[in-house]
Length: 101
Image (cartoon, rainbow, N blue to C red; front, side):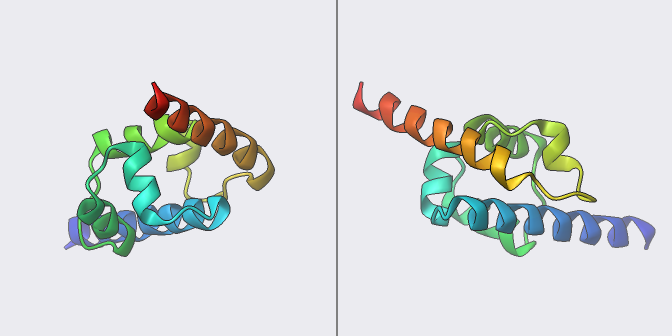
């Protein structure tokens, strides 16, 4: 029973973090899926908490958006919107440049 409660807490925390990222970046979830290489259905499942996220998916999100892994996983504090907007802007530009090549 304890494991289920902790898993639910983790799913809610990850869901909140993904919502926070989408809110800060104003990216549609489809674009985040494209940038990270995560299947859209999986990403939506992580967002609503119906699918447990894998470490690999967390790392893909962090890498694509230049988010420090520890910052992503520190659910007791919010991401810094100012810092986040600078890094996400760079990540989006980089993503589009890769597509042009």
